[in-house]
Length: 221
Image 1 (cartoon, rainbow, N blue to C red):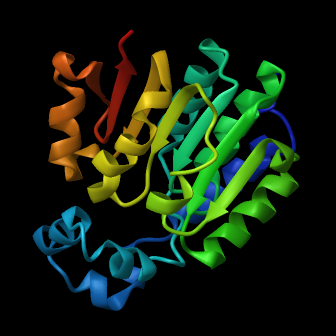
Image 2 (cartoon, one colour; image 1 turned 45 degrees about the horizontal axis):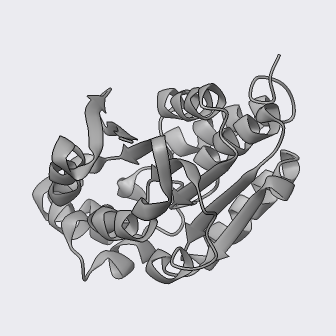
């Protein structure tokens, strides 16, 4: 038995995923009216992302169940002790990663979220799951919050915030990724610059698509 598959985390995740499945962009009228192409342009924008994600402040924007399990398995298999996450939202992915740290014997998870309401929701969920002691939630723009006071070595990185900022966030953290560190980038198709970088071995990565919406990469030594 693991922290992920037992109470209080397992039933909480079932509820959170059910809530996430019941929400969609249709609940945000001005975004629901946009075409998929127009929404895609907003997600790729390096200037409009704050406004775009502010309009999604009440949506969980969760990883899939499969991606959540993948995160837990990766963190366990590499015996992660230091994890960084870009994009906390309601803390669904954070719960998976923190559960892995608990089962690894402890560690530190640094996560960044700029929406105050989401920070509060994530903190409540992590506290209810008994995992808050492993997590440091940094409120604000990740380009500032993830630029200071980082561990010397990072075992696993999750990118699940504003897609257009994936290259910039990687710039902040790259020198601290240990050889063999895993990077999971959700919805990475919206960041072609990021994909070009991690799919080029000369840039120090080995990378492959996973499922329909995830890019799984490894930092080469």
